[in-house]
Image (tube, rainbow, N blue to C red):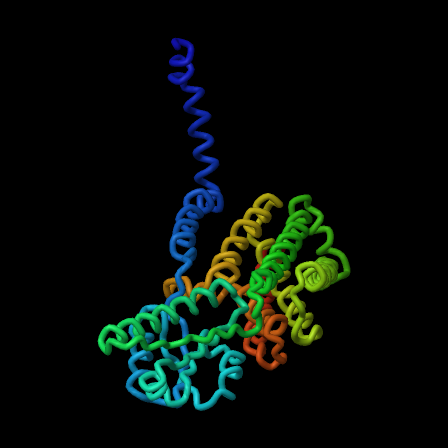
Length: 377
């Protein structure tokens, strides 16, 4: 014990401790990771991970428009689970509403609803949900059915007659409720982003770390040509990965490509280019391969998993996190893949996502190339 106390009290020991603190504190990126990451993680995990589905967009088709149907609609809208966003005119409007992404659930009342309920003892309500995310579809069906059954019990208690309201549930795009229909698009986005961003950033940082990038820049080739030449192989390899993932999804996981393979490939290539641009941007702020791996691995994986809609609905999150999710490229890619691959929609329905991804690519390549030139001059 005396030897230990002597060791602790020695000036050399505290000199080394002070030196280590100095090295840590002068590296702002290390401090940011050590102190900032726990804060980010607790906020993301605390608010993003939720099994509840709130404020889901509800569309109504009510040909009866009577006292009973209006009471049920008011009960739906009064709950925290639903927000009525659209009133449909006919059943022909149901599928286009889902295709345009305007609603998460549609409620269709039968004709002469209150007359059938009072005179025949029963009426019917059809509940239609988008089952590309089976967990969300089941939750929405349960919420809607619970509200309908509560109204039925209240009516039976007041009227002393056992009225029956029969919810008929219809699941669009994934009637078998296979979970693979939901996680395959998300896994595609995560794999492509991590591989492209990580490999590109490490490749360029390795050249900077070993001092060979300066040698390349004094060659007859322009800096932009050198960077693009280093990115092209990863673009080709990522396309090979894409084809492999698609093949495994179809033949192993039995998730069919309901839409055009060309459209799916086009969207994926655009997303790969965005991911390569992210890797290029990471390379401009990293001096070592370890730092590049930490940034591309930790800083990209969590947002992709939590804020892209891959695992948890973005609509359930607080507004700041919903706003933050808009800058996550994987979110827009997953939305486009679900529309084309799962729902079988035409490319025009994913035009918004494509435009956003193209804009992100332009912004990222402009910023990263400008910073890259400055750092290597």
